[in-house]
Length: 324
Image (tube, rainbow, N blue to C red):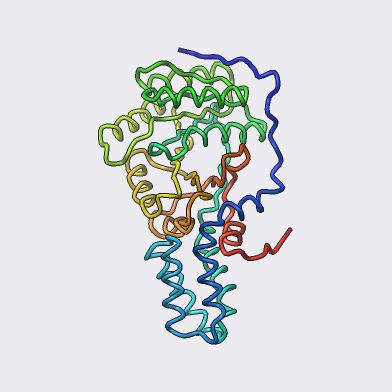
């Protein structure tokens, strides 16, 4: 059924994000601690040798960059050392920053709302990844861009999810379409028709959390995608997978499994502030590259921001920004 929410008489206004770089640096503090002290010790040594390079690789692995990405970075660094005849470990910091940025740069692809109306975005992920919270933050992000938004409470199995999404709808003054129990595909179907009737720009469809090993649930989410396609030819226009950064290398397997089931077009990486495993983006870049549309480093409404490789690496390594 359709549920319409009353407007909050004192709506929360979107805060500007001039302090995003500072929040990002603070949010990546745990990963930077796992990298920073070891790197400082490495770069403080007297000369570049095999022991230093082996220790650098081990440090990257500790930050969950993964074997493939760590080996790629070391191969690139070795090549540059040989080509440029580098001798001092201090020179390695700039080389590491440049190559890590180059590795992550292809993931920097901002989400652009196309001309289709409604522009349907399907959100998926495992339980606890932060899907519902991310949807609320996305709603605010798109509103700040001037788009009207409607939310579909497609997680019909967890009452708390519907209540949480309803609260985000109240905060953002947007309509939430949902029902108690029932077929999640039917909820999303109704939401698409409601969005079309109301000339909504962007529709965000929540789905129930599930593990990739739960085959019957993965088939159900695939059904939701098929129903969206029938209700709006060409939709979903974006399929976002929400990843919890604290799970480290398991994120790679989640990307592969959800991509096979529903065709993932982009990622939202959350909880980067709660882990020392922020290097997992490097692993994703090498093993299952997908655009990282947004990253999250906190609970605030503006702590979900588009991914930018350069500022991410600078915050990760603790290097000063090259531009204001």
